[in-house]
Image 1 (cartoon, helix red, strand yellow):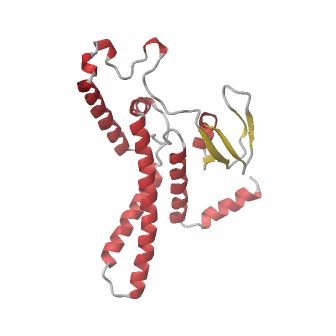
Image 2 (cartoon, one colour):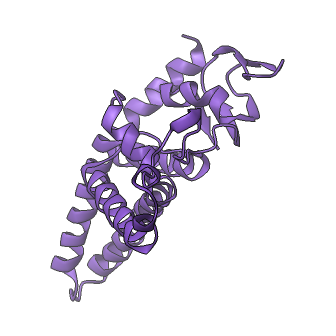
Image 3 (spheres, rainbow, N blue to C red):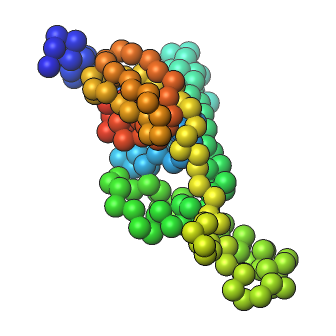
Length: 221
């Protein structure tokens, strides 16, 4: 651990939890919008953020209508902070829902077999995915699949080694910033090798840095 790491730890210890949560939520929001696939759902972070939003809404409702100028100014500050959190949460969840809508069969299979901790999907996202896939399958079946032979009606057929399940593009390019030295990263299928040192910025295939992003060594920007 170098002096920069020690100073960063001291900064984290002296920074209020609310500010740390805002920084983490912002990073999660950026990562979710940039990554071609879902990032594991930050359950503990979202629980704290949603609880704080609920508390702020209660404070605003209780103090709205006060004639005290100081109270009114305080409410303006709280409402501004509240809107910032609400925007990040809404945009974060919309980005995740858009990915679920784009690849429902893929995430149905992944959520059924994954061993990722924390969970890839939240409880409500899992419920949404199940309902979405059920409606989609019913629509396809009544629209045209029922007219096909039984063996051709599956939406997740893998006959002949060709899968009908559409997956996120693992070769999509992403911009990353290195948070910790993590050695050489090889891009599969090429001769490209990247020496990733703390502070470096790269544009690289998602598949090459996915594990390091999930491990916290690299962040998406």
